[in-house]
Image 1 (cartoon, rainbow, N blue to C red):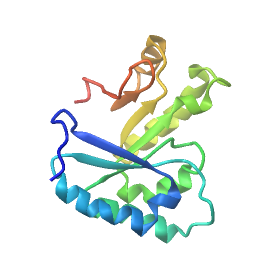
Image 2: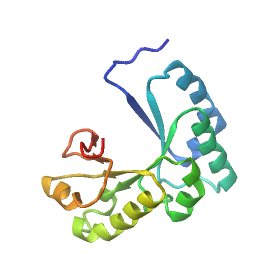
Image 3: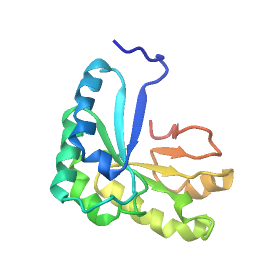
Length: 169
């Protein structure tokens, strides 16, 4: 049986859409989850475009399969690249978390300029009962500006590693 340090309760794997929908990629996770039942495994669907057109049924099948294996499905960088509202709505029944990457809008915009986009995704996460992570935290000022939102986790260079917000957990 694989051994991981006891301090590693969560493992997230980023997958581009071509990987995400490939049965040769997602089916082995059934065995991985059985071997590591105490680890919270997540698959993060990135916003990168596919190499070719992908049928929506393949996206849904893959997301449903990850759920069936006991894995969390996360939509990475919502509002960026291909992870726009249409994909979010399609996969919402299988998604556990949205990640909003403020770094994708910098340096062209200040955090104040990005807040309306964040407010939209924050509202959608609450409406759909999804966890919300904000990526790209670079300063104490960022944290102060984000304090009005109910956010489950912050990530960024400033923090060094993902941080669950104590008020939420």
